[in-house]
Image (cartoon, rainbow, N blue to C red):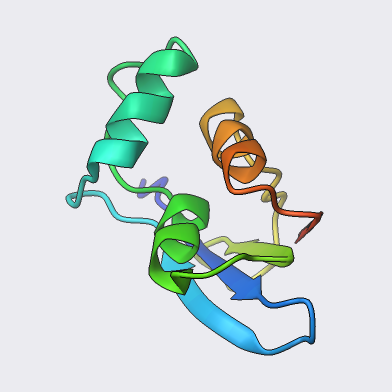
Length: 100
């Protein structure tokens, strides 16, 4: 059984303009992901999470982050940010977070 999910994070500016789209990766890493994973006491979680991917790609302040997750049948499932992503959200000073 494949337990991987399609997780997408959308980063928006204060005026509602879409700044970046991030997706989870099971093979890409990033130094910020590794640093935050270590800080969250999860040093093995080095593969890029959608939230961190979107925040890095935005290259400017992100006001709102919308995170969605769908199972293999296309049904939405909980996408509450993990402890690593919560640290990233605090680090980037995101004001609003919505998730499925």
